[in-house]
Length: 199
Image (cartoon, rainbow, N blue to C red; front, side):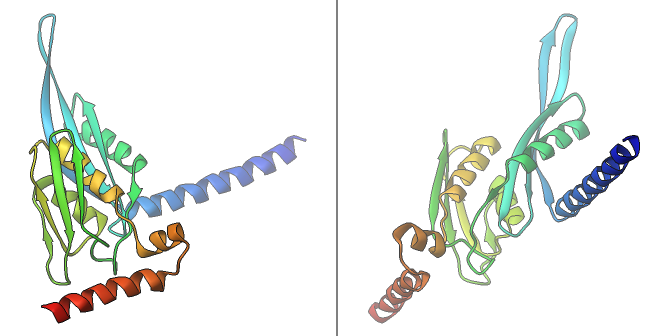
């Protein structure tokens, strides 16, 4: 009986080890960027106690990105907490040709407003501050982005995520409408050729 339990336990250990190595492999592909660090003071009996708040963005540069916020007495601990939260809240964004967005979009959070535009190859990432960190970790290579509201990094990042969540690929649209991907893409190409002939 004891031997059987030991054997079962050994198999469980192997499975745990395998899962752990898969997680480590997934984590090794993830790019982490520190966006903002803020020193926070709390007034307590006998003076002021300082702690640090970190804002981190993580992504695999293949269409997945997340952000997190962490608070601690020391900077490294705040960064670690923020990174852990960011990995838990990652979202998947469909990319066109693995380099740009499928369509233009706008996002808003509080007073933060952002606009994202798909761009032709060779444009690069034209975005500032927190938005650039999000788009680079997402894996976008060509995009034009503009922030037209609050410059608070928390609001800017949440507004950028709001715009990214609204992104949809031709396959998703085709599934929703019960059509083929070719019909959706065909219409887009016809529109592009019509614009060329009109111009």
